[in-house]
Length: 90
Length: 404
Image 1 (cartoon, rainbow over the protein chains, first blue to last red):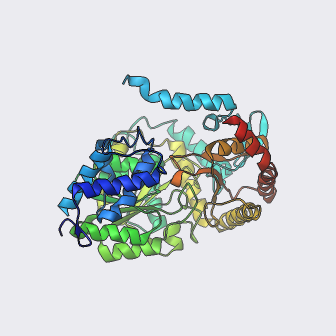
Image 2: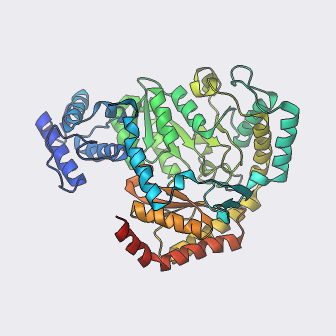
Image 3: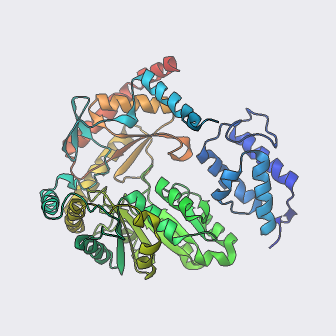
């Protein structure tokens, strides 16, 4: 296996772009979302919403994201880095 | 951040409840009258949110068995199962549970919560993978956390989504623990167990089914969804509770796998807590005999939940699932649900209020649980209360407008 989704290699900027799009959809476009956006603080997502966010984005990257990563995820950047690692490990 | 700062959000939420004059999370049943009636706020109230599915809490034989054990064996065991807290009757109950399912062995835990905590934390560990249905109960999530295993959720009741995640795991899939429930406690919907078993057969792994809400309720002999869907042999571990259809307190796991006996030596929630009291074990043993034979109670339960479900659906309420003893009425708004819950109580009907994030998809729920002990008059009275509130829906909406 390699770091591919379909035939497209995913890199960090693409992961961030996908995350921003999904979070923008989740928050109904009410917030300007950047890499430093705090999922719980700025977007006021609750723990279940963050877990459901993982379900939504997993298929985009063809990885399963363990919920164990969540204690280490505060910002969009944190989550993007975790996904980048998972995609690399495939 | 100061130590207690984390309570600020809760404190504000409780203040809000105070201004509304409602706290559904601090209800006191001033006097319990029967499995289906109690006194709340000084008023005789129908209890339609107690998970007392077979209504066995006042069963004379169960009460008598508990009284006899209390007199013969004392008020408590004062010790862990692993130390001085395993009496002959604890072991007898385990043998009876194993025989009930036709499995090799059973373990009795002190609560249903601890049964999940104890099994998951013992079965899985660092480096293992647990695949769980996204809507699984908090005790399953907490057990996973205690295990240290990698925890991957799959979409609720979606075997294709489970299969996709199994495929992604590759060779690791064969050692995965898959966790689902028989009847899900929030919406009252059932797992597509046959399809989930098919995924397990294709990819490997072990299946744990939590039958907390389906034990005694589903299946000819009350063995739950595994019996109803004829997949008992494919369930590697079945977890259940004594605190619903068995009318006591405690939990268990049954399995045909020899490893179950070793779980006793590694499960911290089994080892580091006192065992169930002799009275609890005695009433549960008696209740298990009743449950296995209770085809009449199951038929009455089914008639009751179908009557309530049809009544509510006919009034235009949005319900969480097809008929089951757990009937969830979906209300969109948290405040609306709070007020609705309170009005039901004023109408003499106690149900459960379920709010996000405990609920799936951010919905607010009024959750009814039906008992075989409800009379059809009580079911009709619950329906009548809901009917009154439907008529008042406009008033509820107006109050919401001024309250926010």
